[in-house]
Image (cartoon, rainbow, N blue to C red; front, top):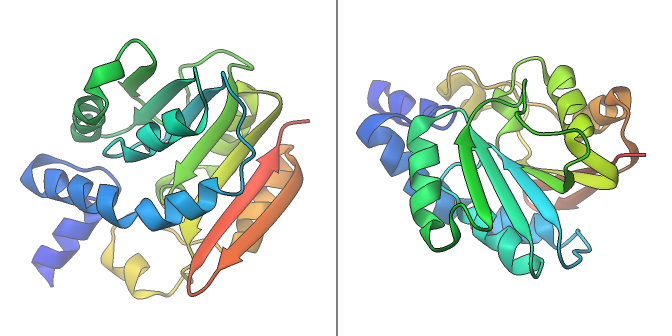
Length: 203
């Protein structure tokens, strides 16, 4: 149980050998949720997009394919994640793909820089979630969208007991916090058995 707990706690901040293993696992296992979640976005060419908690960098590749002539940014708290995401996107790194280390609490980007911000299986680990949502709102362009993709778990689930620092939110709680942060036109999309995408728009 201790080894399993150590492995899955690397979801929040992948480090070392276990962290590298977890990044490979996340790139593979998050693919169905991410593909389904992104299907709710009406992409346009030439977008500038940000993936917060970019992990192993697979979502960055999907975003690039979804918008022709786009620019994609990734940020992650984990040095291991940044290294992996850069390798996965090496072909276009520092040309159309930009990856750096940082947190959702203080995004190192300009006001109104992005058309779309995504967060796949990561808001569970963001401190001061409402403040983080305010940061997302700040870096979005007017009319820009924020897409949160999660597997629905309740606060007493096995995952929250297994993964240190994880806090579960229902889709309705996330939607309410988006509205509290100032997002409009919020939506919840669900797919059985446990997927949810929560969307918000900057006015």
